[in-house]
Amino acid sequence: MQFSEYGEADVLKVVDLPTPRPGAGEVLLKVAAAGMNYADLLQRKGLSHRPITLPFVSGYEVAGTIEALGEGVTDVQVGQRVMALLPSGGYAEYVVARAAQVISLPAELGNAEATALLSQGPTAVGLLNTGDYASVLILAATGGVGSLLVQVAKNRGQRVIAAVGSEAKKAAAQASGADAVVSYAEADWVQQVRDATDGLGVAASFDAVGGKVGTEALQTLGAGGTGVIYGEASGEPTRLAGQQLIGQKQVVRGFSLFAEPAKIGEATAELLDYFRAGKLQLPVQTYPVAEAQTAQRDMESRRTQGKVVLLF
Image 1 (cartoon, rainbow, N blue to C red):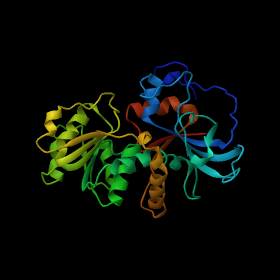
Image 2: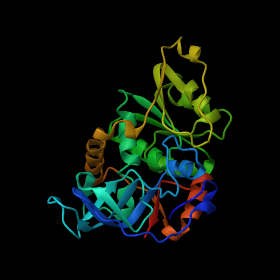
Image 3: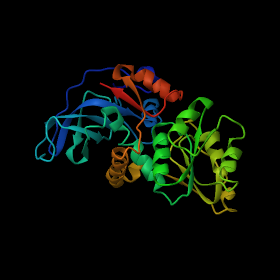
Image 4: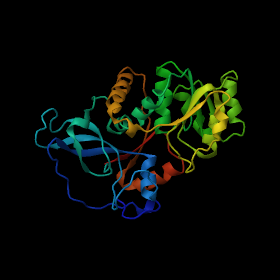
């Protein structure tokens, strides 16, 4: 599923490309499921922070089976079910991945669910590792990262306030284990967050939305609080007057999973431990790969919940 020009979702086209061949230290994977991220939409629109060259195939995460081994690969075998994080190219029937970066899949973990453990899951763990927080506010709490952030924070014993974009999504956030749920479609949502913390404010806010909502989220921080920005699903940046941080010694920082690639494996291991213990649900919304255009439109209009996955 490739695009050769920037634009709306209809620039995505099914094309026939040669099956790649694994080089030394690589494996060829037959893809069963490919994860979709908001970054894919930005790539398609020509707005990505990471330069790409057209034509381009998006997709960071895949799960499937090993089809062939490159020279020198001995620690995995043909037919083995694995998941892998890629630099790009996941929206394809076959992909090549570095053997050192593939992770064997437990039998009880489905292909679609596995994709959530490669980008969204480690992002959730990494966000929580930015500090020692007693309470957290999670924007977009029913999204791919948000739904996992809620669960991991609860597994770590933190108080969680989930914020969603509509009344309809409140139930899903509550089911993930949030202590309180608010909708930022409501004018007084910032005060609702403060009320849920007995007026103290949260220790940290995690902002994947940006724009007006992201700016308002900073108003929920308590003394010494930290605002962590890791996305802009609204299409607008979070804006602030730096001087507003002075009075309560607050901090605003950014986060990207790809700035700390060495920590991805450790984060995935933590998530798998939660999963095996029955303490982590992996909500997914799946589409056939032929409906990638629809999947991206639904994600862009915020009609999706959980991890969005293309199935082959």
